[in-house]
Image 1 (cartoon, rainbow, N blue to C red):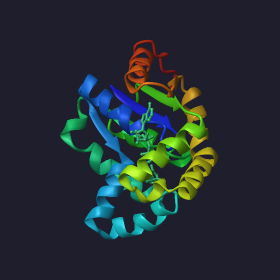
Image 2 (cartoon, protein in one colour):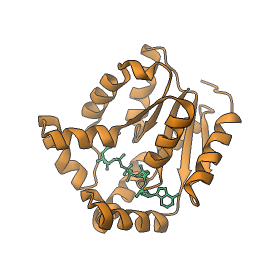
Image 3 (tube, helix red, strand yellow):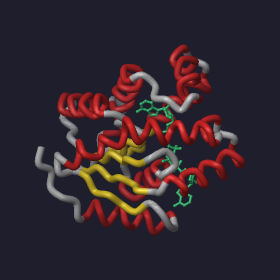
Image 4 (cartoon, helix red, strand yellow):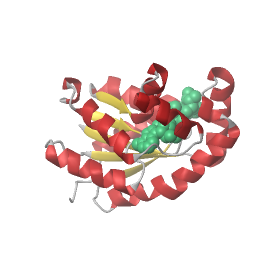
Length: 193
Ligand code: AP5
């Protein structure tokens, strides 16, 4: 099964993708985690990405697509995958479409987690205090939410028009949200493109 998990920053994509990975036995690919690993390793790409991420902006489409292509070539993706944090704008959605066509791995479903901004701000504040993730400071979270509204939110319509989108309430207990996601996968609409 090949899934895109959409949702605002802090909406629970990473948390839920890890649970879906365990439940479905498919790979979890987070472009944020790939970028953070590059930042930690201090690679030239990581050094470039660090500044952009700490400003709450999107890293260039070219860099992220290159990373994703490399990751999708690994054997653990053969059983399927969950993309968490990609695509983040319409150009990335088109690029993904072309890439998946080329490798013969079309998407089966797109799941979008809906969480009000107030909950997101609260979640990121808790994580900022607990873990100190640089882009979780309140000012950068506001910027990330703006970038999401302007650039990423239209991606949901892109998939709605292809008959792939299911929207899920992302508020409540983590286990209850996982159950909603799995139920949506069971009853997903058939793809039209
Ligand atoms: P990325 O790492 O993808 O961050 P994000 O989308 O901003 O999302 P988060 O990781 O903050 O949240 P999440 O939705 O995964 O939720 P989580 O499960 O962690 O991207 C970071 C940056 O990298 C971007 O800003 C950008 O610069 C760059 N980047 C990444 N991909 C890119 C791309 N494709 N193109 C360009 N640039 C890209 O949960 C959040 C918190 O809430 C956690 O503490 C969690 O424990 C808690 N939580 C989870 N579920 C619940 C619940 N039900 N109730 C209460 N708390 C909960």
